[in-house]
Length: 248
Image (tube, rainbow, N blue to C red):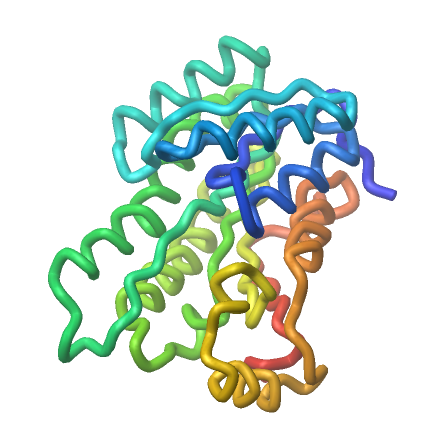
């Protein structure tokens, strides 16, 4: 069992879905949790209560990670409240799926701003803190779409591919300071979004997965827990696919 007692993790976009599962898993392992939300205070407070019930300190902050200054202030506020940060999980993301023929410029810009620039903003905000402490874990949630591409997701695939390039670059920059930087590339994970897919599209996707089933949010959370732990101290710059073999 991985041990994270006494550590503080920032998990962006942890009010629901994969982000919430990650936050709960890290809390189960003893980590205090800080996370952001964007205008969904009720769900955020529900998540805070669930985290506190696990015996850890938890706090939610309203912040758009696409905003550079707001992201910097978020990290400053978290450090002031929790003392220091040990783990950053860049999970916040949005989709605006459509074929490029009908994709608006705003659809592209919004996805890049949250998914890719948001990852930059949050990483930049913790960068000096991790360098000074000479330790830290940065875990970026990418996607197999960032590896394989996918019709109707040119904006999302671009952002997730960019996250992979950023992960490898920052891993080289921070390695000498004992900070690891890795990415996880989820495949077809069962969430509210995938549950709402047309049945034929869902069946076709499942048929293409060697394990013949969708993944669960806990599959991603468990991988994050490993990368956040001391057991993963010699792994950096990697992209771990958690996709049931979909991208083989």
